[in-house]
Image (cartoon, rainbow, N blue to C red; front, top):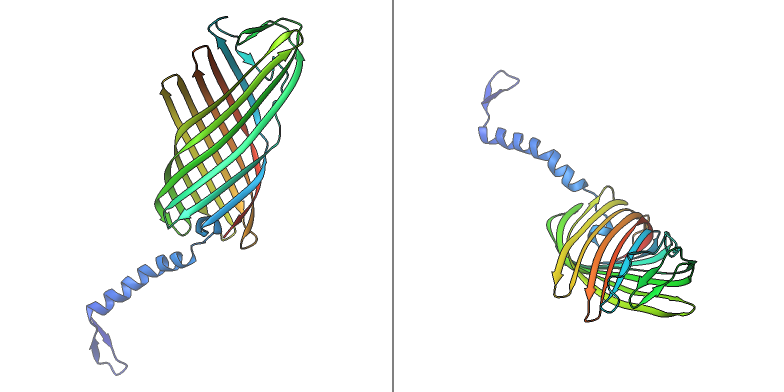
Length: 281
């Protein structure tokens, strides 16, 4: 290749030089994009702590069966026993990044409810039958602790995709009582292992999105259960170490546990928005 001098003479131009110029022109947009990729603290900081309020809509059904009295009633705690379907509860979370790709995280909430209602049908709970028109007092305390370790198989400064293995440790403390009848109660801890998929995306240096899905089905010995958890958050970080967020949580649990004399079965759903503040560094 040649170029022409002002005098009319020509000067040879090496093809290598032309290729370098073309390559630089093609790579320039990609390099510029890499330099301008937003970095949000949620994807960069090693430690993350969040606290907020969760507003779940809840449905709950349960059975407490007895070898002495037979199969108990499937009790709808909201409709049959008058428990509130919605209640605001605190929720806390934490995350610790180990290097560029590994992370350990936890999330916890507790929902305690009680009610008193005159029932319109007989209810058998464990060894006790509560007759129609009895004024039954009920308590249903539930907590969920999620622990997981995750690995980001795709990682960039502004995005990550990963998978994890963890536990949802569900705890139940349930009791029914009425005048003239015995108080029946049961307490169960159900450790449900889960597989997780998660992602985070920085939209700008202040705005980011996060999503997660947990799922597992397990049966061993006298215990069986399944769990599905979904989470979606949008985060705003106006300050270097402090941010705020709006999210949603959905949790679906089926669990049963059996002893020599009793079998307890629980089915629950939790769905609702989450407001939170976070600190990271």
